[in-house]
Image (cartoon, rainbow over all chains, first blue to last red; front, side):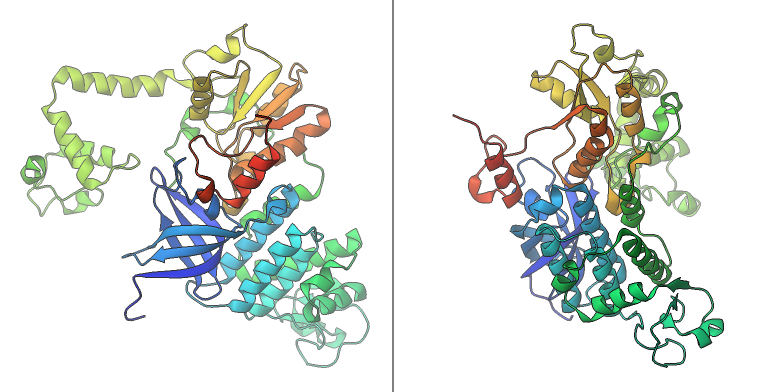
Length: 275
Length: 220
């Protein structure tokens, strides 16, 4: 990147926003042509800002960016898709935010990944069109595959033998399903049912649209969620922020904090705004 | 400009380590500079300028400033009902009998209470969450004061909750969360209308705002 153009145009999905100072924000944008990058928008938090609505997280926007010394500066933005139906539903919204967080954590700055971008846009469009929340599992499996952590589903991840139609060990450390003979060598993992294996294979080979048409029993969905969640935790070596939150929405909501109101202390909550 | 030339100070922050080598600023001034530098939006140069300004002001003015800083920390606390900041507990809004006790307006921070009061169109109670749900950064329900709101509802007096969180992703998520949390208890949860701000240009309005504005259109 010897000399860069002073301004450039790109489209991108806004992955996240961090506030800076009084009225500025830094946006993390995922672009099909430039990969993930950060850019600042000055004065974007003022009521008069013309760009504010076009830069909300989860929006797919056309952006005009000026090259800055440290951070590039957003100068114009126009919404291509706002995914309104996603924003109106707490579960869809949280799942979409979770998927954006996965993209953010599985990518490095300026690495172009068109397939991953297409996958993210497909997911947002599917959620917006009313696809079931199970499409999150499709997204998890394919994020792993597209970033170099493909899960071995048809052959044993240890010995390479074809897997029989029977329960198998899902071992994150070995990189996929492990046949019965190799279980000792694979170490820790989780036994998954034949049905779950079939769904995973279907997800790996099919399109998001086909997968969205699949009706999964709650039990099966839970099984998939657990094993893919474990795989993602193992690769990232941490919990995702939104994943924890997503789990808490799954059941009936309960009060989060058993501490009484009198516990509130002034000092802990009147801190200057995080920037 | 004059002040900067006069200072000859190595800046702030990491200044302590360098103080031995460079002709040093007297320690009390250095401490003041560092204290200013910790404030939001104040860089090293502004911190210097403020510190030297304090040095030049009368002792009376300087002490008044120091006093008001102390007072804020000593006398201001949270209202035990609405969690707004206040000098007296319960706060003026919660203890005012003329205000409607069946409606609660839920806001993110104390400044939002002032904004709504300024509008002059609201005569109910408040509840300050001191934050907003932010799944991306991992701010969950346990990090904001949602629980206290639910406790207030249990008294049975409240009929409507107006969610006045910001009209962004986090604010919407919070509003929907509260709706899901307290909706089953039979309390009416409403949301501030979203649409065009006064003085807005249609041309620059984003799709979401326009769609909401259309949804919420009124007869002229």
